[in-house]
Each structure stands twice: as C-alpha cells, then as structure tokens.
Image (tube, helix red, strand yellow):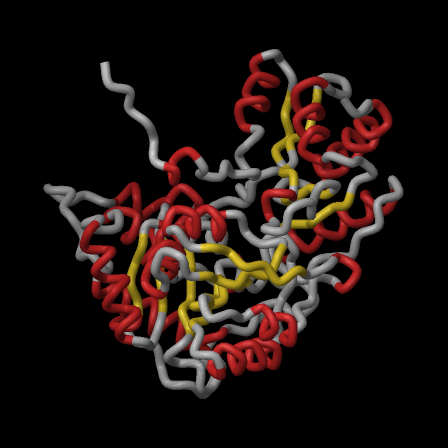
Length: 404
C-alpha cells in the first residue's frame, strides 16, 4: 500500500494562538468549570436589531448565488453612506472600488494573493494579528517583522519600516486600530508610512475593521483611514468587516476596498473562483448601514469602561500596562517565562471557586523567535463585573502557578 503524505504547506501550517486552547477550554467546561473567554474577540454586545430583522424577513423563493463581487446595491450603499465619510477631500469611493468578501479574513487573503508571488515578503509590525502569518504561509510568502514595544506604546518608527525593505518586499500589512496592541495611527503617521511605500513601489494593506473603536476622542470620531491619504490611491488596499463593527462575527461579510483597478480585478478573479459571498448575510449587512450613531456611542462608551476596568485591575495586582487607544485588546506582560504553558495550565488545571480564564498566548503574534514568551492577549469583550472576576482568577492563578 502506497503511503500518502501531506504537503509541506499542510505539515507546517501554523495553528492559531487565539484558538489553540479551545479544546482545553471545552474540557474544562465539560468538567463543570465556568470558563471566561478573553482569548477571542467575540463581543457580547447586542447585534443591531436591523440586522436581525433582515435575517428574519428574508423570504425569497430561491436562495440564489450573489454576484462574485457582492450585490451592486450593497456596494453602492457602502461607498455612498459609509466610505465616503472617511475619505476627507480625496476622490470618492464607488461601488467599483469594492469587492464584498466572506469576512475580512477573505479580503485579507485576496489582498495578499493579489500582490505577492511565492517567495516574496510582506512587512508586518509585530505583534500583529496572527492571520497575517497564517495566510502568508498559505501563499508561500514570508512575513518580515518590524518590532514594536510596549514601552513605546507600540508606536511604529517609519525609519525601521524603510530599513526592513528588501528586494523581495511587495507590501506592508498593518492594522489600525491595532490587534493586539490597540494602537491607533494618526493621519500624519499614515501619510509618512504611505510615502515610504510609494518611494519603494510597495502596496499598503491597511486593516481597518476596528475603525469605530477609539476611546480618547469625542464620541462619533472614526480612526483615520488610509483612504484619506493623498497620493496613496494606487497603493492603498483596505480590509474591512461587519464582524466587530456590528457585533456580527457570525455574518461573515467583509470587503476589500481599493482605487487600484488592477488590484480590484485580481481580487474579483479570486472571488469568482470561490463563486460568491453569502446572499442573506449581505441583506443583513445592508440593513446594518442604517444603524444609528447612538448605537456606536453606547458601544464605545461601554468598551472604554471595560478597558479602564481591565487596565486598573491589572495595575492593582502589580501588572503595569498602558490603556490601549482603540480596538478591544490588551497585550499583557506576565511574571512567567512561558505564557503558552501558563495559559494552558490556567484553563486546564486551575479554577477559583469553579471559574477559570482563557487567554491567548502572545508568542504567535510575533515572527521573531523568542518574543512574546511572557505575554498574553486579553480581549475586553466581557462585562465589567466579569472582567473584575477575571482579574481575581488571574491573580490567584499566578500565585498558584508552578512552572513545569
């Protein structure tokens, strides 16, 4: 009998540090422990009722394919009622600049695939969202890291980006607001980084899925967008999603936005290969565009309170962290040598009065070996009383932990 073997791509595929402890957490639940999930960005905020009603009211005779780039009316609405709010005095976004995707993850994959060939490199500012590395691996592309540090609030030095560029570099992938750092780039910082990309003929993939979630600005303020940077029209590729904006992670609707027609054409061809984004979910996403600003004001106020509760609670047990500017994640240094081992032990073997905690080890958010070994990511997607309980669990867990 001939032995079949996997590809090297399959064998070496990285696991997600965000979901790596899912099996251990399930076992803890099966054993009767209450697991508080801070490892994954699954909000508990109510999805706008307009979205839910759109699902309930869908009543077509046939559930048919959507166009490969998404419904025309949805793309037109995205352009006119949403993206043209964030572009400043730059040329307007049109429906022809948008490809609707199966979540922001597919938009990211299409963007990376559109600008790279196997053996190319993409710059990432570490720590970064782990799927950047996962999709780079899938495409046979290397992630070349530019390291940022907690002591600098993870601010990005443009000179370090420029110094990291090689003959294999094809683009930069960067989130703002950031995951897992919460960093929000200013318009001026986006302009500086875009200028570097322009000088070196690189694409700039900007992940803007947390655009609404910024905490040190007046309510209703949006994070600066790369779409508003003058002169960056050909290089700019925006990744977006309804998942976090509308607390609708299960809808799986995202989009790729670019004024570069060749990039858009390539992304559309990938979209044709997977046929179409979901039909009913696009109707729900269309309804979500009517969500009133009061919804976002309430959500941002709630997350700001959660951020402050988590930061003050961590400081109260001797862990010094600065408040993140946006998104809803916090990179947390722990007094342990191996956060992966500690996180697994915490959810598998420890509980405090029947409760335990699941966090994401941060090592998988870095490309540089050895970094993040004592850090975890904590998502403040739980109510404030629960966050306080999580701090207690972490405090007692750290006291009880004995490194293996």
